Image 1 (tube, rainbow, N blue to C red):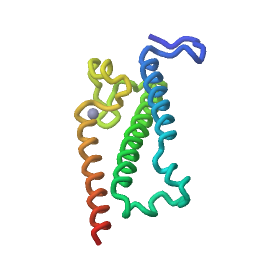
Image 2: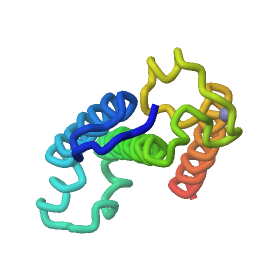
Image 3: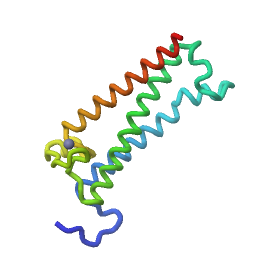
Length: 144
Ligand SMILES: [Zn+2]
């Protein structure tokens, strides 16, 4: 199948769910920005968001939750825009890490997938481990 002359709205069938997902994710990010606990903090005088994080552990937790959730959305957006790129490149459906074909079932379930399950899981594990180290570092810092 060749992509013939198409208007900017005419994308391949794979790109549609990706674009929709990206749109939804952006909307969620925007919503989050509006509820941003860091911004509220900034309004109440101090505009360095971390200034009093040690005095208000509960607040700190809300911040961390917010940042973690936001980070997830941003990471997802990144993956989605990479998936859109792959559609344009014509490499959509092949794993970005190992180059193998991503099973059709996975692509149907996760249209924005840019990696096969194995590579995605490995990456997630590495990511989680990295984050844990970061958190541990935080605690050590707080305890010191
Ligand atoms: Zn792979």
